[in-house]
Image 1 (cartoon, rainbow, N blue to C red):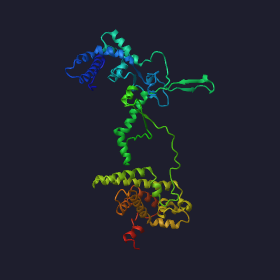
Image 2: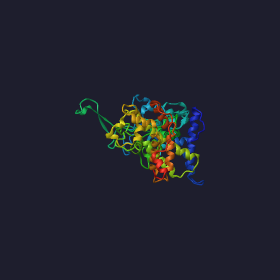
Image 3: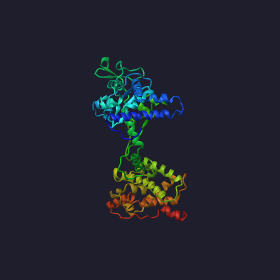
Image 4: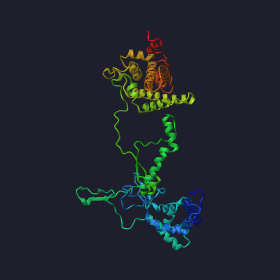
Length: 468
């Protein structure tokens, strides 16, 4: 439809109806050859009075609804409802009442008559033709026909699609029905109410629109990228875990309803699974030789970052600034997770937990110094305090980090000791994470304010070709 502005009043409605008919006529003519004998017949059928009279007759084949039966089962025949959300009682729970005035009405019935509803959806100054006719708007009536009596006849026909069908409420053998206990005696059949649930199609369409924006909109895309890159972001990130899609209507979604056709049959179902039990926020390195192979790799963010790092490096990116920054960003994300792991163990567990020989006897001594630093303040731990204050262990932690990362990438990428040493250096020089964490502990334990990046015993042996 054209985006040209439309003035209000009778002239505005006339112009909008005329534009609608001209566009539909042109679409028909474009499919015909210039000398096709049917052209005159088609042109005559789109004369204003002729088309509107036919539309007023065909409108009986469709019904405007906000709550539909067909999504329950496509072959169900029964009552559909059109209820203005503003007329519904306000509840604390989310429902159609929350839509307010800005809701999208739906249409069910003969798909061949849906063009009539498109006419009634035409808007002038933010108000649909159907809403104007329901309100008895004089300008909308005069736009239908100059004869007031004929205009009233057509108005009654058009607004009839919002009225319940004759015969009263009815259900169907393929519709859902539910007996609801309204009293206290479940054995008394008279205390049950029979409910026939309908599909809140207008509410479902509003939910679909919001989820689509959250999944594919530019604002959420920017938030998703910031979250992935671990960068600050002012916006809100929306995510729908366990989201399912229900397709209605198969290859002919218009047979369900007009809104269902606009969505291509897609209807979103939010996850209603019970929460999964998480035993503990902090896992312990019980019987582990290293937290790298047991606790660090178990963190979801670590696994996803490693996958992304592998994918990126396997593309053989060009050796430029963008590549270096991207690689460093992913390595920094792994370092952040490592620092978070250490912080969790240091803050949650009581100092001295690593003295439990039954559970932690296999844990590397350097990792005990790193993860249980306040053990140095306990009585009888003079040797532990001396080794901690000597500050030889951070270099070993850096080496173990580099070797661990090398093992994660080895086999798919040509990485070796050179890369491992570089990753060790990145950890030990991480100002905002590893070094800051150690600086706070050194203040607590009155240790020197620097981290000597010494070569470990293993690295000295490797430099001498394995000779002592």
